Amino acid sequence: MSLNVGILAPGKGWGNFVSYISSFKTISKARNTNVILITKEFSSAKSYLEDQQFVKEFYEIPDNKRGFLKSIKYAFKLYKILSKAKLDEIFIFHSSVTLVLISYLSNIKNIYAPGIGYQNFFLKKKNRLYEKFFSKTIDPVEETNNLTKKILKIEKINFLPLEHNTITDEKLAGICIACSGPEKQWGVENYKEIINFLIKNNYNKFLLLSGIDQSNLEKNIVNNFSKPIEFIDTSTKTIGEVIPYLKKCKFVIGNDTGFSHLSVAYNKKTFVILGDCPPHTYSNLILPIDKDDDVKRSIDSIKTIKLEKVLNYLNKHLI
Image 1 (cartoon, one colour):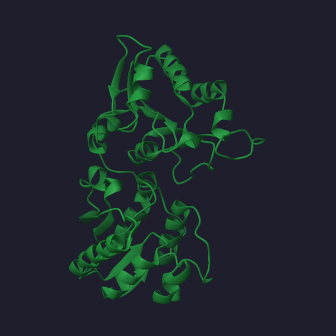
Image 2 (image 1 turned 180 degrees about the vertical axis):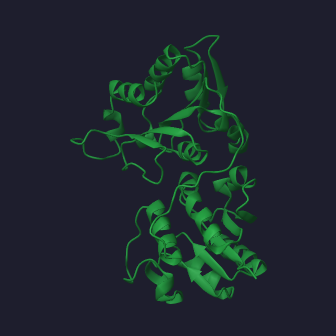
């Protein structure tokens, strides 16, 4: 009889959540069973995981809002989900003690979690990543991979892309102009020049990956070009509506955001322009374009990345 395995991954952003997928698939393979996945609504996980065989069942919990009564409601809903799922074991990819406590109260035999602070009261030493009681959490992707490796007793998490059969459109490039904050925004004027460069190299269709509240960024770009150049607007689309176009892209270039991680998950070569955080290393499909070594990493360092540097990198690795 196979184990009933759960993965609880609320995440700190849906980009981080997407970065965990290889760990999710590795757990499923190691335990020889499809997993029950529990996450927050903001992750939009159903949009890109509902057709993946390794997921047996989805549960979405509302984003945990501040306030005593709202926190109680959140905890009670999670308790009902875990009790209903009747899990043999659960992997918790988060530092919250509340998540571990609710899992403990739900009579789950084996609970695995990072072991941050008071989580350790409810975790066996062999079931946590950190041995010191007051260890500090690190990069969430690295932490997720390290916990998975320890519990499964493996040396490496291999990159495992999402399965899909969509045929690539050789003339379609994804341009990720969305961002979660100014520290991750390379600038619309730069992306106009990137598009000009790609047009000269026979690309004529562009998927502008932005947020629902970022239509002004798309308009700023589209108004500078005319037919036969084609743009696909995503500012009014849900993540689920964007995915069919993303699957068709030849490659993606842009800011470090959720769509860049989702592009990698769909096995696309993805050029990520960085500045405020170190390059991601969980897949060779990530081609980071980072600040110069003599520039201190800060919220402003992305602004120091010159257009010429990015064009040269594209010319070397793409054209």
